[in-house]
Image (cartoon, rainbow, N blue to C red; front, side, top):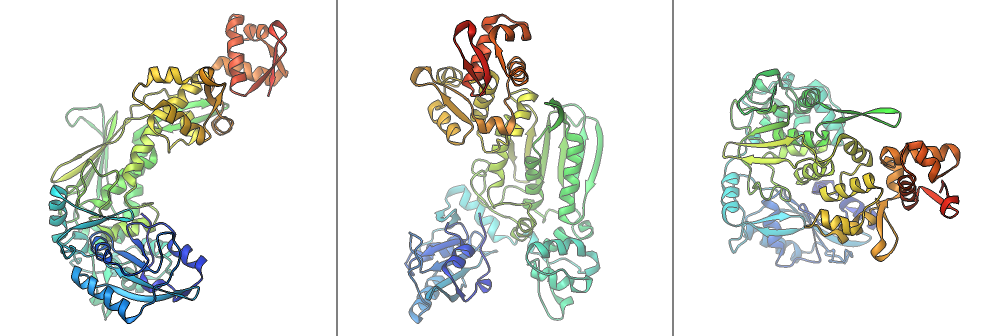
Length: 542
């Protein structure tokens, strides 16, 4: 989910290009375009208030044409009345875009109470839509919202010297603010929205979110604000003997980096020889591990005193346990597509620092990247007291294929698509008939069409005799991926300039028919060209 500017940060006058650059053309959870002030504005206000807040821009139609909706008295009265019916205090202002007046309504995120539409519906923003909550999801969401989130609770004491100026400045610079010195720590925390400003500054209310994010040692205030990591031998069950254990604590960015370093050192990996160099392949995709750690520290319940995030590493898996049950309406079944922040202040700073790319996409990205490596998907287990994600290092293909997929950068591929590419790599191509026999449940035609459209495969032949081979783009990016005999023949053609079937057979110490078949597969793959007929045929570089 993208973010929007604060209403006070929007210039009073913009060109159309500047307007679209600032807001973008796509509606999302924090942005909605309206032609005017229709009755469904009430749904949008109620849904945004129960999500992350956002902006409603009045004067843009469904075709993204700017049609104007100036802030007249009637427009202001209508928006104010609708907002009051929902029980939400909104801000309203007018901006001019290419001489046309638009009205912007800023909806705050409401915490500590429930906002519904006048007819009693509880809505949430999902993408650009306002969708209702029902059943158990509604009950858990209501319980979560009625409780004050722990990150909003004031720190018991506030000592500016307890905060890392370096960590604060990193966040300030990422958020577009100038750096500060130690004397301006109170103001900086307010600018980062983790403190409530007051005068004099020492009377301001510093929130727990600030301690978690920027305290040199947050355990002085929150005893469980740390990550405990242990590497155990074997695979269990039972605790098993520990090889090493440590505790990471400090500013949250440092805690994440410390945790990642421990997991990297103990996670193991594979080392293979690719061409003339050695390549290391981590046992677990680093982006997946980081997502698991970031989710654990960002979404945990900081109201559970003394409870830490626990990372346990075994020979075959990594388990990351976070204190507190699933927040809001999130379930194990819907977490790939839904988003809810127990700690929105912490999440906002982490997103500013680049630890979170888009709200609500992290879990789905974990699944996709594990699939791209042909590894088992992550598993989630949730209780009332904790959430545990488990990453296993088992894969469906050997290390050479993993390395090849990694070089290809196939993180947007599904598991079946990656398997098809590996099969094309190993066999010099694949046929639809063979794939249907191998993966009976998959839509083979649609999958091959996707791989061709992505430029990863190309079709050779027509109708019943067609087969699919690695594309030139794939070969250029990750190599031919050919088994040894084919690679040997290709290298020799590059060296000599041409090769016959008989010469190839001698080279790889196999019969002529086998060598001819491999050479013809190189032709089908578009890597070499055959000239001549039968015994006089020679194979040249394409």
